[in-house]
Length: 227
Image (tube, rainbow, N blue to C red; front, side, top):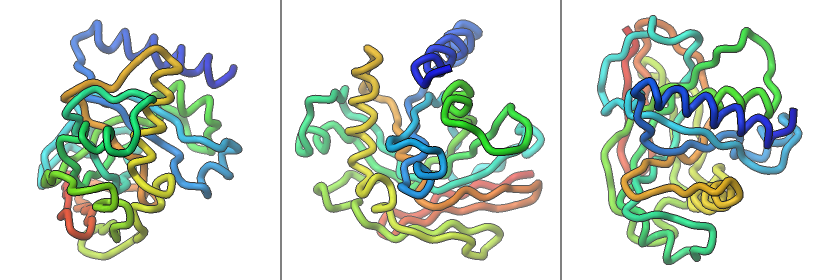
């Protein structure tokens, strides 16, 4: 299968989910760091959908048993004030952002253990499962969130740290990449939707009882407890 085939599979699976009553909340990126792209043998991010049913506010307790093999990773969330498209320059993209927020993505996979190919990830909606949104802030300018120190904590201890610049060099590039990808597929990210930038640090596995927190300097934190 090609990546195009895999996105067709994703489209059909999402259509079945929507027909069953789910509601799409937005979009997510994956494989946004150069290291992960080299491991996957690609030079671009991958894309998937998120759903209202998987969105949680910060400090929420979620059921660990509701997942198969959950992992968490810190991300920057964008709330869209208007539709974005591939023709937008930086100023237009900034104007289309209603808010940014620290976020935790909870990824999960229906595959058994082992490394996945890019095609397998895309067909499985890039392991999209759930996400937690922290406090919302209106960005001031393009440099406002371009290089913010980010920490991932588990049970109070820092387990990973990086910068928002590790997302395609600047998280705003995630919006540009998404807009270009959706234009290729005849789709658009719309007003009111949320976009997850892609992981800022490596993901970590989580167990029942874990409390996980994503801290982004100047923006605050998103926290979730598994029980």
